[in-house]
Length: 260
Image: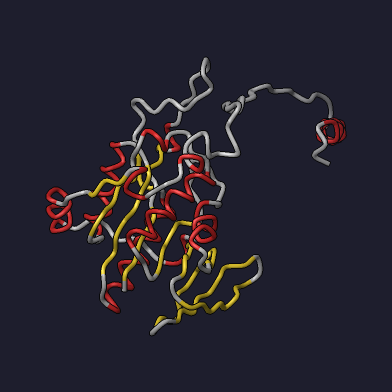
C-alpha cells in the first residue's frame, strides 16, 4: 500500500502578526508548525501502513525551511519525504497549489492520498478536493472513521451536520480528514534519530513536468489584494438608573447593533 500524506507548514496562529505597510504576514520570528489537521492525516496513513504494510511518504510544497516539517513527520512515523520547492511556485493560490501537488503525486504514485480537511492559515478546504480533481480520482471529504480497506476498496464514514454518511470508493482515492478521526502520536526517540539522517528529496517545476501557465502567480486565478487584523474594540458604556431602566436601555443598545 503506497500512501502519500500532504502536509503544510503554517505559522503558529497564536503569534501571527501583520505588516501594516505591506498588509502581508510577518513570518520572521514567528514559529512554524505542521498544520494540525495534517497531523491527523499523517496518523491515519501510519495506522494503515501498520495494518496492511507498505510505506508512507509525506509531501509538502513550500520554501526550503519547510524541510523541518517533513523531518518532524518522519520522526512521527513517515518513511520518506518530498519537498516541492521552486521559485516558479511562488504566489500559487489553492488552484495552482493543487495542480502542483497532483503533478507530484502522478510522478510518485499512490493508492491513498491523505490531506487534512483544511489549513489553519487559509481555511479554504479546497486543496484536497482540487488535487483529486486534477488527478481524475475520487475524493471523500471530512472522513471521521475508516471502516474497511481491502483489495481495491475502501469504506469510510464522512462527517455531516447531523450524523455521518457511509461512503465506499475504489482505489486510488484522496481523503481529507477531520480531527475526530484519531489522536496523533508523538515523535519517538528512534523516529527523531531517523529524521536527522533522512534524505529529503526535492522536486521542482522540471521534475514534476509542471506547465508554467498553471503555477505561481501566472497560474493563479485568485490573488490576495488586502489583509488586515480585526480591530479590537474596548469601548465601554455604563447604564444608569433603576434595574428596570437599565434592562430597557440594554435592550435598546442591542437592537441598535442588530443583536436583537
